[in-house]
Image 1 (cartoon, one colour):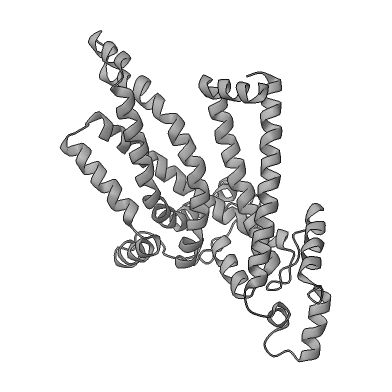
Image 2 (cartoon, one colour):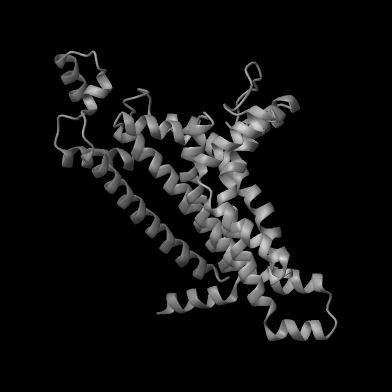
Amino acid sequence: MAPSLLARYLARRLALLVTTLWGVVTIVFLLIKAIPGDEAQAAAGVTATPEQVEVVRQRLGLDESVVQQYLNYLGRLMHGDLGTSIFTFQPVLGDLHQLIPYTVELVGLAMLINLTCGVPLGVLAAARHRTRTDNSVRLAAIFCGALPTFWLAMIAQTLIGRKLGLVPISGVSTLGVDVPRRTGFLTVDSLLAGDLTAFSDALAHLVLPAAVLAIPFMSFVIRVVRGSMITALEADHVTAARAKGARERTVLLQHGLRNAIAPVSTLVGLQVGWMMGGAVMVETVFSRPGFGSYLTQAVAQKDTFAVIGMVLVVGVIVTFVGLVVDLVQLAADPRVRLLETRRASA
């Protein structure tokens, strides 16, 4: 890949990122302001006197017009200040710094389960095209995709957690099990500390919520892999390869699965954003700290800066993952590079 082409591509994506985040900030700010309720009253508490509420209103700058509040916020945002939460009375950036590892850890394991189960099932369905195995996998994919996350979470808690007692059903660690916090990721910190008991405990608390989050998304991966591989395996050059005596395993991996990687990588970029949204529900049901509980409290308290800060962080994470996926495709697919070259020279 030519360095000039890569530089122009990154510049265009960075400009798109800034524009997108600015639009997100503006829309969320206006929507939060449109929600009925008094932010100053919520921040001061229900027992606060009118004078105390007025003091809080002036201290938070809520006595100014909405337009001036918006401009003030954009000014602070340019300096990396996401504002102060009226619920925790802490800088929003500090709150999110503590919560991000919990949600990223959950989404990361869910994506791992999603791919390690979804891709092989898609390959199996494509290899057994128009057989009972194919029909069974397709039926399972449709069933998984139709399961509501909150219902699945409650069923998993009841059957796997309470009835069978295989894993904990709430929280992130057992009381008394603690490790020094370095990165904020419990599994990583326990490994860095060499504490396998803490690692097993953190993983046991994480695996059930991650599986619940992954199952509905697995349906998309199965169908994309199956469809891409069937299309690739019906190509003339694959038929010729089989006629020349190529092993079926080689045909599946080199001709089928290779063609399925590009659409799956695109789907993974999209699913990261969807999973961040789905994590809100899962964290709430499993009583895990993270974006879910923080967003619930922030919206209920009309905590404008907290909501915007969380949406911004999620937007940056999703956009970054999308950029990585696009760069992988740009490096791996000559057709994408040709398209970008033509776009740059236009």
